[in-house]
Amino acid sequence: MNFLIVDDNPIYLELVAGWMIGSSYTYNLADSGKQAIELSEKHEYDLVITDLFMPNMSGAKLHNIFKSKNIPCIIISAETEYEITLDNIKHKYVKPYDRDTFWKIIKNVLKREYK
Image (cartoon, rainbow, N blue to C red):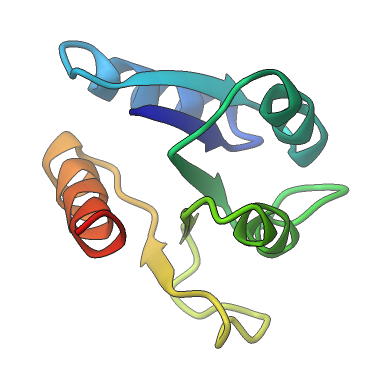
């Protein structure tokens, strides 16, 4: 499986990249919605994990783009109270800051999406 991880915070991207070490998954990192779209034109993804609040293109907009391509998307945010309605978003979580929580979220979503 190939993941695309999108976050405008380079420290968080580095953290997540460290959590991916030793997994059987491949991944790409993107620091913006624009870069995520460019990468998706070159690579196929089984799962997208994106921050909600990013400049120029929100994670909610990215979610809609990938949903239209039938690619599951997880929205994560450090904000516990989302400022926009996310009713149409199936997988939304508070941004995990530890490896165990990150992998619990991933496994839960993969189980539901790829039964």
